[in-house]
Image 1 (tube, rainbow, N blue to C red):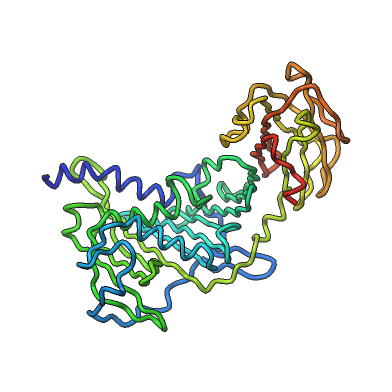
Image 2: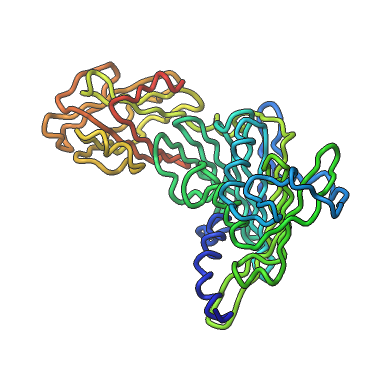
Length: 398
């Protein structure tokens, strides 16, 4: 295959890798002056961590040191096997993954981090991107069913509260599944080059196997000058490489990529800003005839806050991540502040007409049967995106 043809064929793969590193073009970015760390009530997540040093390289590497996915001849033949081994090991390890990209010959950088404790969830992730003076920062904290985002842009900060809902538009890592996941990030870096074992690196008390690729790797991929350090068990510690992306018919852009895994971080729990938003939970009660809205913690919901409530007799509609989708819809507004621990209830008429939606202070059985429900709303700088089915119960969220 000729080089121009090959580059065209690989353009999609290179673009996919860059998507997993974050999406450029967040609305009207400005200099937010945001700190590169997230303050918490107990400690600080340092998102500028670096490796403990380059280590000492040795040309020798025995076959029994080769990580999963590497054949006996030292060639990486199955990147998926290596990625699966990596995340199987770190799933129960306190860790932070830092992924950095420098875009072409610009001064634009993109940095993402993912931090969790001894379990994969809860986790905290960040994204910073854009040229100097116009950087955007997004933070995301994920629990089992709920997520909390903080987005800084246009000299203001917005908060978003999620429950069982899609996080479309939030470019920080929001989960372990899907296109823009940490797995796909590392997989793309490994699949895009022709890697083979090139000795070992001693770093402290650890032995890391070094895999490398070079310019010739572009004959079969979109990664060049790549170096990967990985433990014999399969934990990918460092990746440094260049992603070659087709930028035009006869032009290409080279983006320098650097990923670092640190496994000695202190897990702090939720960042302190999570408590500045109401922890709204949505559930269906009263034998599926009432939607319950409960503030399980954090800040109070102000009086006169309006919510769009949707419903369907079909429970599947509550599971697609779009709270605005439903067969019926109505608007309700809080009469008083909804303090942490307070609960209100929504009912609808049998036909689910918008005029029949009503808000109650006490549990009330309505006529409409909710198999699923959704809630969206905006008050000040906080927006809500919640969904629930008939098996979701808010008191379990507290």
